[in-house]
Image (cartoon, rainbow, N blue to C red; front, top):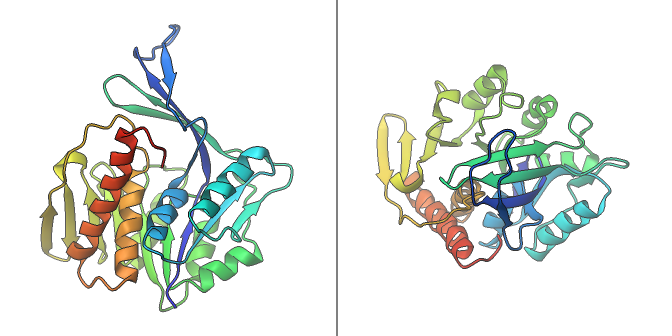
Length: 278
C-alpha cells in the first residue's frame, strides 16, 4: 500500500496584511488576515493537506511543544484525515511560530521562531513512518536529522526534496546529498541554484510564469492561470503535495503529475481569494 511521509518543521502562522510598508523606527498599520491568527503552517502541513485531498495516506513527521498551539495544529491535521502519530510533542517546549508580514507591494517577510529547534530527535513512531513510506518527501527541517532520515528511507521508496532557501537547514553538504539521492526536486526560480548537478526531475514553480520541468535534457513549460492573491503562503508546497499524490495515484509522466500540482495550488489560492483559510 502506498503512503507518503513528509518531514520538516511545523509552524503556527500569524499573518498580517500591511497597509503601509514596514520600516525601522516607524509604525505601520496592518490587518490580521481572517482565520490566520494563527493558521496551521509549515511545509509538511501544506504538502500533507494537499496530498490528503486525493485520499492518500499521509504521515507528517514534525515536532511541536506541549502548548495549546500544538493542539490547534494537530486538530487541523486531523480535520484533513491526516495521521498525527508521527508528530512528536516535546515536553516543556513551545511550538514553532511564524509572523508573515505581507507588504503593500506583495512581498512577504517571514519572521520565524523555531521554538524547540535543536531539541528534535526521531521517535520510534517517526522512524516507523519514514521506514514504511513508499514515498518520502524531505522539506526544510532540523539539519541534524536529515542524514538519519535519508538513511532510514526504504530502498524502494521514491524520494522528493522540497527546497527552501534556508542555509541553516540546507547546508551545501546536505544539498549535494539530496541532489544525488532525490527522484524529484521542487524549487522556485530563486532556489534553483541550490540544487546543482542532479539526475532528478527538477520541477520549478515560477509564479504567474508557470511551471518548468527539467527531465534530463528535456525541458517542458506548463502555463498557469494567474490569480490576484496577496497571501500565497503554501502554494508551492500545495503544488508539491498534488504532484506527489498524482504519482502515488499512477501518473506516469512529470507533466501529468505537474498539472495535478498546478490544479491543487490553484484551489488553495482560489480559496484565499474567497477569504477561506487553507
